[in-house]
Length: 142
Image (tube, rainbow, N blue to C red; front, side, top):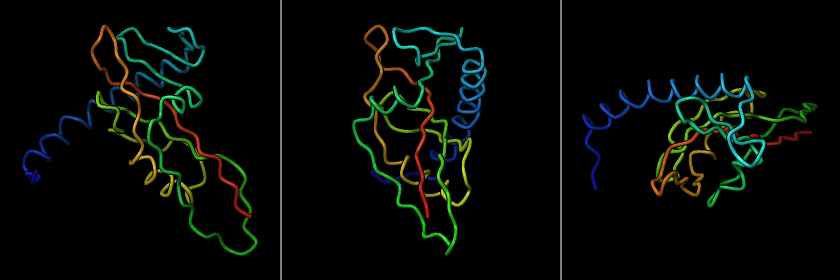
């Protein structure tokens, strides 16, 4: 099916504020530490937006692509994480990605890989819903 530029632009216009609202709500929720599920890493705010921590979100992934990190300069050493907040749509596709921490040299590769991840759709009352969460990738460069 061919893409229609006007429809894509209209969709981007609607999804950006929505993603921003979900990200802000999820960030505030994560700071409050409100717990809504059986697992301590599953959080929910008053509006019903569900926020998953990295370990729980990884268990929900049904398709993943590991990042291919860029070569590093001689003598460069990094052992840490790159972290992203993501919005997963009703179909289980990654809809929005926000880099939240990590060395900027590696953020692009992890961001690119996350775009191809797919998650098991989350059902609430039998209907798929969107959810947000945090993904972490360990990076070791020597």
